[in-house]
Amino acid sequence: MQFQYHRILAGDAVLTTFDVDSVVLQGNPLDDPALRSQPMLLPQGEDFSSLPLVVMLSGYTGFNHKVVNKSSMWQPSVPERLALAMQSGEIKPAVFVWPACETKLGGSQYVNSSGTGNYQDYVINEVIPAVEKHYNCGGENNRVVVGKSSGGFGALSLTMRNPGFFRATASHAGDMGFDMSHFRGFADALTCWSKYGGIESFIQQLPGLSKFGFTEHAGIEAIAMATCYSPNAESELGFDLPVVPETGEIRHDIFDKWLSYDPLRMLDEKNNADALRQLDHLFLDAGETDEFALQWGLRRFHEKLKAQNIDAHVEYFKGGHFAMDDRWQQSLKVIL
Image (cartoon, rainbow, N blue to C red; front, top):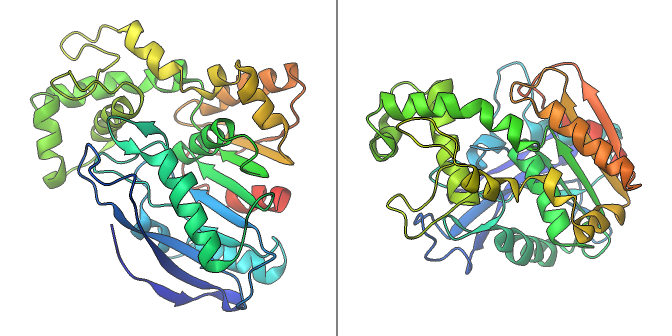
């Protein structure tokens, strides 16, 4: 998870990397590396002292190589889009960092978990302070967090669990409404585990799979979420699943543990609501045809915000959960 990268983009912005040798991730349960390279986008110039730090949280299976590379021959990468947007004046100059929070199961959800490691602490207590010290940027009242999908969930979760730490927050198609979004994937996950001869067999075969389709994605995602939301050191797998693999029966006691992380439920706690209320800006969006039904979670979340008199800029755009790289600029125009 360590690599070096350096490239000049539009407006003389620099796409580079910044290494953090983590203390909190040493000896993590998945034996993932503690030394990690964070992609960085630096605006033109050398003095960043007045500039905000934008913490960019990738979605599930996002990782540092994926950030710096193009996903299409004809479309710019996210850093390229942001460099062009700064050059044109569409968004204000800022320092951007993509914390490297991937795991061998795909993602950490940016939470502290005995199943994956303490990734909230990694972001809040290690990555951000190190970047701000090295580049002399951000600081109190001058940092924002933006995320997509699991990263959108992470942006809301980190904001609510760390009141006052961020000045503004944006969540693009963030995970919420777990009772609808996650339930949709359990049937495919069950099919996946059966197809590969069980959960342990699937995990062992995963690195060498010649085909990785929607079914396989559902299978590994459910496992990754379980390591984050319902870890159990006494379980043979190291986590508890909210479904019985042999029958598909729902284990409501386990799924209730997952729901305790759902922003919809978190918002019911006064301290979490107050953390969102004190933000300068809260930007939320989702596609009208999101494949994981996250637009319905957002609609419920928005109603709860209005009931508690919490201001938010909410948009529903045409499209689904994928091919939405243009949405980053929409939120950054509002919150920077």
